[in-house]
Image (cartoon, rainbow, N blue to C red):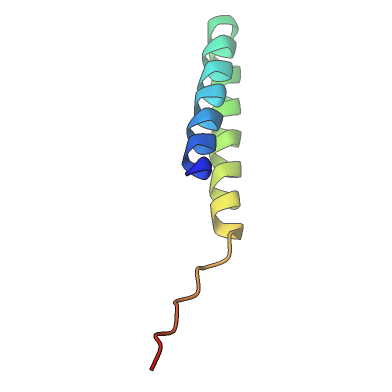
Length: 57
């Protein structure tokens, strides 16, 4: 239950930072958004695949 909440909190912080940067300089916000997306994809790919549970005989 804690993990989804942390993901939502992380997303809210990232969007707040991007909105603040966009108020000053839009191209910088686009570059930061691209980097954040790249890091999110790398993080998701680095996660190990869940192993299926074996059923009891």
